[in-house]
Amino acid sequence: MYKVTQILLLSVVLALLPLSVQAKIYLLSVGISDYPGTRNDLRLPHNDAATMQWLYKENKQAKVCLLMNDKAKVATVKKALQKMVSVATADDIVVIFFSGHGVKGGFVCYDGSLYYDDIYTAMASCKSKNKMVFADACFAGAIRQGKSNANASSNSVNKGNVMFFLSSRSNEKSIERPGMTNGFFTYALQHGLRGGADKNRDRIITAKELFDYVSEKVKKDSGNRQHPVMWGKFSDDMPVMKW
Image (cartoon, rainbow, N blue to C red):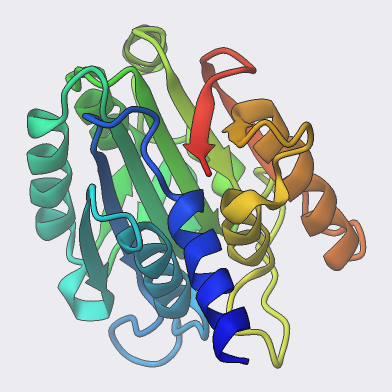
């Protein structure tokens, strides 16, 4: 059993090696289960955010910021996001993960909404050539609707290599099932990033490989009720993870 555990831990570490020795990975992981009051509370988002933190933290080159529940206020998230994108270099990987409520035009932090404008403006200012936004939220596919400047958002995303991978279409809920510790999307995402999505076994997970793996698994697990979406300006072969 001890030997098996060692092998499993080594596999996780290998799955999170940066794409070059010098490259760093920056992760901002946000999860809100406990919203003000009780009416809007969820069960799993804080677990989702913690899972992603654990996954990336296995890489010693990763710089991780975890914000959960009342620590995930709009101003705090914006500050952490701006700090992350300002220090990342061209070779670094920048990742934003959010789990919680979604609304048209953005995501719901503890005390208000983080809009698409806020995210794409920050990403557009970042030098990194590999930028990713993962979101496990109801109606996540509606992030470009509502409060945003369509022309500005298009110009910003078109500055290159920004991948948005969202848990559901604009009219779909992101499903939680009793007994699970993560939502369907986060569960599939973290398994995909740990090597499950590497279809050709070349030890590099590309954007297309990740989409194919996660979307198929989520559709199957949800009984075809939830369909992840991916968009942005990036190559299908953009490396997402090396393992």
